Structures are given as C-alpha cells and as structure tokens.
Amino acid sequence: MRTWIIGIIVVVMLGWAFYEAFDTNDQTGGAESNSQESSNGSESANEFELEESEAPVSEKGDWIQTGEKAPDFTLTTLAGDEVTLSEYEGEKVLINFWATWCPPCRAEMPDMQDFYEEHDANILAVNLTETEGGLNSVEAFVDEFDLTFPIVLDKKVEAANDFGVQPIPTSFFIDRKGIVQSISVGPMTYDYMVEEWESLN
Image (cartoon, rainbow, N blue to C red; front, side, top):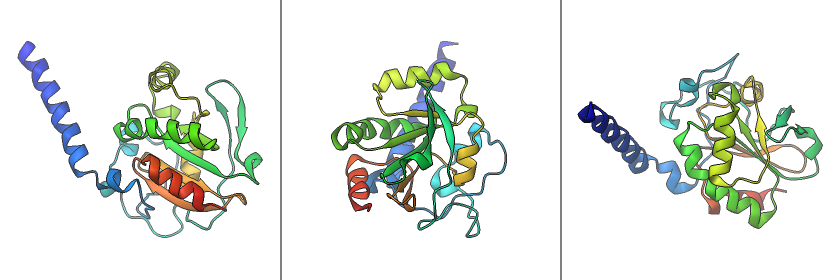
C-alpha cells in the first residue's frame, strides 16, 4: 500500500514538472488565442481541463473575438451580491474564468491578487461552479490565497459558454465601452496584466 501511494505522488509530481517545463504561455504571460472551442450546454471539468495546445480549433464566430461586445451576464458573488457586467460600462474590466481544480489557475492567482491591490482594477473572477465539488472548495481556495477581488459564481457555466471559454484559465480585457480588447488563454503574469490593463481605453 505504501509503495502504491508513493507511486501516485511521484506521478503527480512528474506531471506538474512536465507542465511547468512546457507551459510556454506561462513565460509570455498569456496570449490571445483563437483555438477555443464553442461550448454548448454544460461542460465537464475534464473538458475545461484541456491545455491550450490540445484545444480543438474552431471556425471564426464560435467564440468571442477581440473587437466584439462582451456578452452581458448577471451572476452572484461568493459573498452573495449580484453582479451584472453591463453595469461596469464606462470602466475597464478584467474577466477571468477559472476553477479550483485547475493548476494554471492556481499559478496565476497570487499575481492577480497583487495586480488587484496595486492597480485598483475591476476584476471579476468567474468560477465555473458547476465543475466544482461544492462551494466549500471555492471558499477554501479563496481563503488559501487571501483573495479579495470579487469571486463570481457561474453555477451553470452559462457565462463561460456565452464567451466560448475552453480551456481555462481564460481572461478577457474589456475596455470602457464594453468591447473585448484582448484575450489571454493560460496563466497570466503580473507584468502581462499590467501591460494589457494600461493599454485599455
């Protein structure tokens, strides 16, 4: 039994090491991707877990493009407050789609918290709640990383589907007119967030 447990730990560690070694997006801080697949209906955690390089290529129009109006949504935060995206029109917004079971999401969260604190940015971190084991895992994640920006619950993954999100994390930088100016697939660095934020009108 002990050998079996050690074997699992070794496999997990090797998997994470492989991810760190070959995740070139982590070095660039994320880049706009046109390799997202359209999401129709509820998606499973495994489907959202695809790496960027494994994401199926879709035809133009299956996902939100830069230069397009961001789809509106009304969702509830972890704190119980209702949030509507269109209410932020006139302000810049960073929308980040994520889940607790996603290692790249975990990797970018400390930088996102620093960015939020130092730039007073509007961040809506949209959790794919339907793919979670329960709200307890989301609350534990928030506590672990001391996150203070709004955590928005996409309980039926409807907002993620409207944006055509796959894989995660995927982030959208929205300008003051509600237009998507850039899309990042994969974990973002602090410097990348600052650069994209400052480029928004």
